[in-house]
Length: 405
Image (cartoon, rainbow, N blue to C red):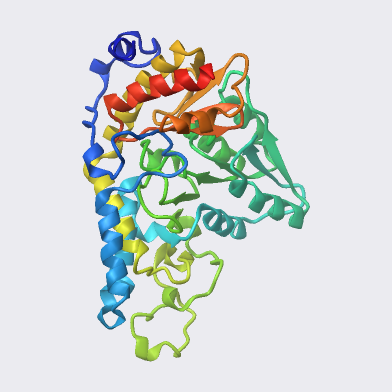
């Protein structure tokens, strides 16, 4: 039965999806050999945390060896690797390296943006219902401190977030803080339309792209956000506790969250660090976190970014879109429905059941070595380029067993 369903996946597919022949890029082949995922494990939870590439793991192991020999740590490890990572991420999103800061987390990036947004009594921040907490709490503090308000756009019944977001952006709005797709189910936001409305209203656009950078294309010039934050450990295929903040050139004279020595002009000269200076390094570097030159995490981060750039985000997105069409077809045989294709991002598949999902579904799936996420009442399926036909068969079998028990 599983094999028959896999054969039917492409032919049945989803009518609203573009045909495979019409897609502008070819999908990647299954690249499971580049990951250390056992053959009997079906891992479909990259939105939670990506599996590490073997190249990323090796880079980390080599870096641990260097840290155990501190006399071998050179200037390149303090400065050059930071600039290499900055440049690679800038290439990934179509920015200049001067626009990119290294941060430890998405919350750090959003807090930096919040610190640099002018805000007064009566001003508002627009967010989405059930948005990830780290993209909400900083704005609650900002609004409370200035006598403003956070306006939460309710989840739309048709999964189309864009119209209600546009309605909420008015003359009082100073910040629109949204993702490219909702973290719980992949429901997509039209960033071009939201950006245009924000500009017309004089609001800053702050994007939490934790769940899209590296897996879905971004037209930076067209969207023209004020700030972007993205951690490395999800779709950037990197380690935990490091990531990036994009600051548009118009905000690069802002105030950083912390005042550390390495972001100041002349910090490369260790012999003159106590010649205190007021000037920062160029561009968004002033927003870099302290201890940005993490000798273990940076090589891992660089290895992941290099691989993403080699594959190309467009090819990754098309690969994951096609995988999700197959997964959706399998899920439909078990009575689960997905968001309409025109409402969702290519890389995340949100699944729901008309009568609700049974209790204990996630651990029952794990017993079958199938790993997906549960966010609210939605099964969040998030494959990557390591998914094989055997994974699809295991998903089919495991889902059937878990729903039957």
